[in-house]
Image (tube, rainbow, N blue to C red; front, side, top):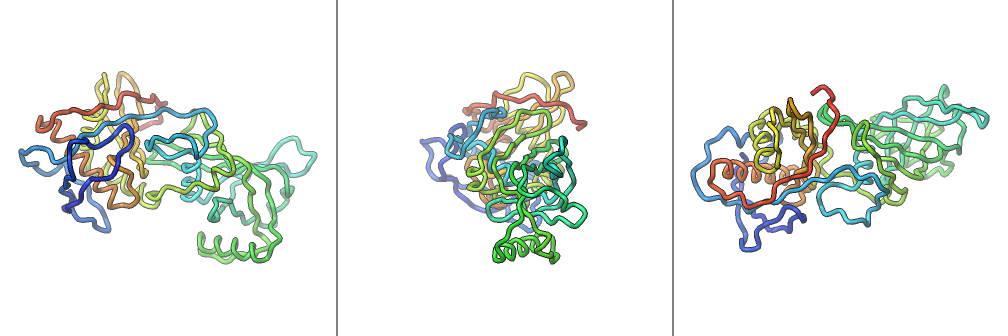
Length: 335
């Protein structure tokens, strides 16, 4: 565990909050290093009263109706628009589909590389062989992101494939492309997909949601995106006991869990997959005690929740919190 003193005083999400009778409490956390090492389960905890405040957790199912940024989020998970922006930031390859000519009955899809500007607008570099696409025509760019080989969120950008004419804009787009791929590009090859709406899905076979162009452009990608995959991998590798304990302490299950894995982490919490030979695979959403915005905050929250779960398991702390009850059953993907 990372040894470091830090108080939890921030207001918590609706379903995971600090006791109103408690004042500022400090956590025993280890130092943050360039390469985090989450190993709270490997040490011996002293027999003492818990220094952690109670947690209340809940999860949400996939939303299927249109979603807007002004809708109530409840601080449990990012909005679909934010998820789409995160996918576009972390991915650089997608499938562009459009009609070659006005008379074509079938759209053609090709693999393309892309970068995004500050508003998430896809920037494409189309060479002579694929610049035959009909400009100013309806097009779509499909992009997906694999998370821990357990889930594949994806988004489809719908809009018109345009050729910018403004020279200053083209220069900015070329600079963005160079930063993304480390290569210079001829501005004559630069195109954009002017976003009109976005279709976002949490995984294969799941219901998706439509996101408006304005919501997509106003949303921010998740601040943990650049190191989320690494942290999840390290936790699943070095802290299996803690992850499994989370499903026993924070999640209300009526079946035996033989395997538990963390799928992804964002500023509001993390998703877990719980496997049962008899019942199948389920996904649970567990919020953090408070919103986190950096790697240090992830480590602090994880270590604090690991400590609390251990103390509850050893009967050092009374489990006076509400467990996660809503689970989402998912299709088996060859875990």
